[in-house]
Length: 84
Image (cartoon, rainbow, N blue to C red; front, side, top):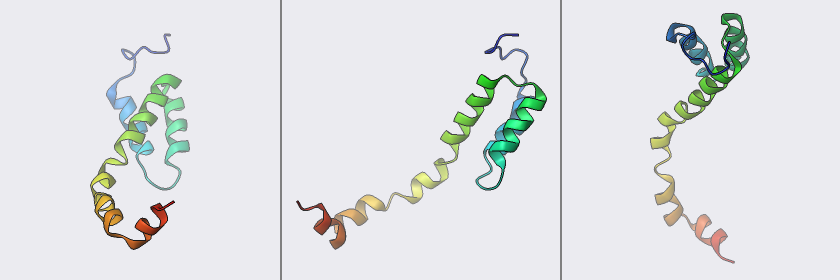
């Protein structure tokens, strides 16, 4: 079996593992790793799924931090602490 062979790994096998990795709290990562191991997913595929979850999880928060640049320009604390 090749480590990077995706032909033997179907999306129906990988999706539950990715869903567990996407749980923001709790035991999502250990449970996802155990599920991947029980389903016979190769470790590079499991690592790739974990990387995908790390890219997908911050996306909803990306827009909610849009106020920071405006706040930094108007905050007295930021202006005082930025001076040498």
